[in-house]
Every structure is written in structure tokens, then in C-alpha cells.
Image 1 (cartoon, rainbow, N blue to C red):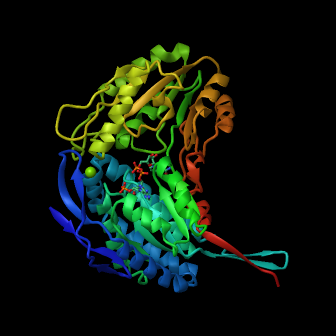
Image 2 (image 1 turned 180 degrees about the vertical axis):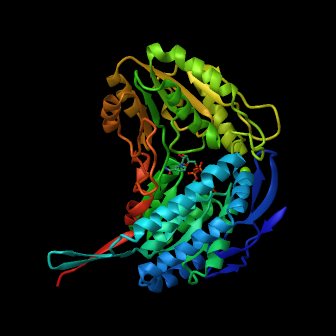
Image 3 (image 1 turned 90 degrees about the vertical axis):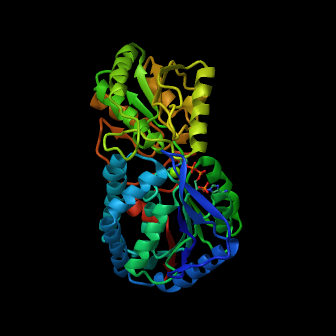
Length: 468
Ligand code: NAP
Ligand code: MG
């Protein structure tokens, strides 16, 4: 059992009086393999104080110099990418193929894109005779989830640091080890003391205390809508800025005349990769009534080819759920789906082996008012919903408290017509390629603010005007 008993602040690994530890569990074996110290409130105070002190000079450090530090962090991630991917497999349980071929390249690509965009960014603008100056807010508290352990942190600290802020990160309890490697990389990159700080510990204690802290200016949170809602209270203590990336219940809308096989596999892939623990997953597959039989045939064939198993095996697509709690949550939703009258077409059970494995599951005969169509399951569960007309498809897709992502597959003109009317932040039309320079984030209860590129940067900038 590996023991991590230090916290990173003021540029160093610091000891703590804490006697409490979080266990990190290998979800494929259910065995704890590491312990990470739970920061005390006194530790959080010290981390915030070091970030506050560092802010004064970091905020006036020339942007090119800040970018040069982020380049060094990027180089450190690239150098240690195999080790980071292996750590993500161990603590999250995602397949090694997904960790290596998706999670790591995603982070590296996004940092590169943000740096490229940053070169074009102007911190000062003229408005008539006035001078508009953009600068950092101060200390940003970053609270991150476990589903993409590296990228959820990167998406916050890359823009926050570039904009001139300093950060205190509290990573998810399930996946603190990737965050610890991140801190080591930052230490090696030689950032000025206090610019980046890491406090491990549970969100309900460490994260809650950190986000209430009077010296924190911005709360940047990714996670569930429930916790996101509770952060309005924490932000209200001293009118903190709130950046929220929350849940989703996105639809893949298939329109007649489009490539059905592509649409079915593209939505299925988002609930198979990462075990469906992806906020932008296309969990509702909308097809015309008279295409249901064909849809089922494609799904049956495709799911036969999916390998569920040890995430370390190179041919595994679906590994275990991140934790016992997450597995129970997903199994509960599956039972609710059955009880409300949806029909299990594929899967529907826990797999009888050690580890938190759930069969990839497909429901048919789902109506959009059922719990499994309204609430985020965050597991390998796809709901097929049928519709009669294009108008009805649009209505169903938009009938959600969420608005994060979506996809449309169909004849070009109709597909764009539907895409324009979807109330979500990101939509792929006929498999359009994503750009890491484009903003990512949600409408409605999926959050406020955007991540990536210059749009991500703007969330971390205060505006000051000098009238001269
Ligand atoms: P969660 O329970 O909301 O946890 C997210 C983070 O918040 C964790 O670090 C957690 O700490 C911490 N936290 C918990 N209670 C807190 C509190 N009272 N105050 C401050 N922090 C607190 O979500 P999750 O179950 O880990 O992650 C899954 C959810 O995140 C899904 O709903 C998913 O859609 C959403 N998500 C959204 C995006 C996006 O970009 N929109 C991306 C990924 C995930 P602990 O780990 O100690 O509990
Ligand atoms: Mg785990």
C-alpha cells in the first residue's frame, strides 16, 4: 500500500497534522492500493494563504512568461504520459486503450490549443479613449471529478494560470493520484511558489471548506448538478465568481435518410468508453418508430463485439465502474428503468466477478418522462426512444433539465435545422470533428461558463477600465 502523506503548497510538499486518510481502490479488484492524506482546515488555510501571496506577482508576470511555464507543464505531462495513463487505469478503472488513446491525447491537445489561442489574446483594448485591462481575479478554488482525472484539472488550471490567477486544487477522492503527479510536474516546471497548490481530502469537508474560504475569489467546479447547486451558498459568502461544469443527458437524434449504423454506434460508444462516465455522453438515442427494428439489429450485432473485462487488457473496451457507490447508483437506475416499464434489450445486471463491473445495457420502449431518460446515470446504459415526426424528435431532445451536448445524423439540411434548435452547448452534426479551441460547456442545469480556448480564459478574467 503506497502512502501519500503530504500536501503541495507554497512550492513544496508539506507535512500535516492530519491522521485521516482516503483509500484509493482498484475498481477491477476492489482492493485498496494507496492512501492519501485528508487535509485539515488549517492546511487549507495555509494553501489559500500561499496562493493569495503568490497572486500579486503572478498577476503582473508578463503573459508570455506565464505561457512559458504552462509550456513546461505540458512538456512534463508529455514526458510522463504513460505513467499518468497507467495511474488513471488503476484509480479510475477505465480501459488502458481509452486512457492512452483518448484521455491523455485529449489533455495534451487541449493545452496545446489553449496555448496557441492565448498567443492571439490581447490583455488590453481601447474603447473610445478608454483603456480596458483584463487581469486575474485572485485565488481560484478548483474542485474536480474523477471521470477524466487529468483533464478536469487541466481545463481549469490552464486558463486560470494563463489569465493571472493562482489556484488551489481539491481533486476527487476516487482519483487523487493523477493530481499528485500533476503537482510533481508543476514542481519540476519550477512555477513560482504558491501559484499552484494541491489539497487532497473529501469534497464534503476539504472542498466545502475551500470553496467557502473568504480569500477565494473564484470557485471553478466540475461535477454533479446537486453539488453545483450547493456551491451558490458557498459563493455567496463574499460574492465569489462561480464557474460550473455539471451533468448532462444528451441526445443523439437520428433523422431518416442519414447513416443509421453510424448514429447507433456513435451514441453507443459514448456510453461504452469510460463506462459511460462522461458528462457529454449521448445517452438518449432518438430514432423514428419505423427504424426501431433496424436499430435493434445494429445494436445486437455491435454489443456482441464489445469486450468487457480487465481494464489493463489491450482489447478491453469496458472496464469496471469507478467505485462501489457508482456501481450501486447505476444498478439502481437500471432497476428503476425496469420498474417504470422500459424493456431491457441488452445487459441489465452486475457481472458476477470481483470488481465493480456492470453489463453494457440497452433499454428500449423508453419514454422520455421515465427516470432513466431524465436523470444522468453516468454508466454504460443507453436508452432508445422512438419518435413520429422531426418536430417530436426535437421536443424530446430538448425536454431535459440539462443542455450539455448532442448529436444529429441525417440529411444535411434537416440535420442543421434540428441542430440549430437544440438547447445545448455542443452538437456534432453528421460526425463533425471537435476542435479543442471551441468552447465546451452547457445550457440550463449543465452549468455556467465555458472551458477551452479563449472562451475558457474569459471565465478567469476581471475587467478594469481606465478612462483617460
Ligand atoms: P460530485 O459528487 O459532484 O463530485 C465532484 C467533486 O466535488 C468531487 O471532487 C467531490 O469530492 C466534490 N464535492 C462533493 N461534495 C462537495 C461539497 N459539498 N462541496 C465541495 N465539493 C464537493 O460528482 P461525481 O459523482 O464525482 O462526478 C460525476 C458528476 O460530475 C456527473 O453528474 C457528471 O455529469 C458531472 N461531470 C460534469 C462534467 C462537465 O464538464 N460538465 C465533467 C465531468 C463530470 P469527493 O470526490 O470527495 O466526493
Ligand atoms: Mg478506483
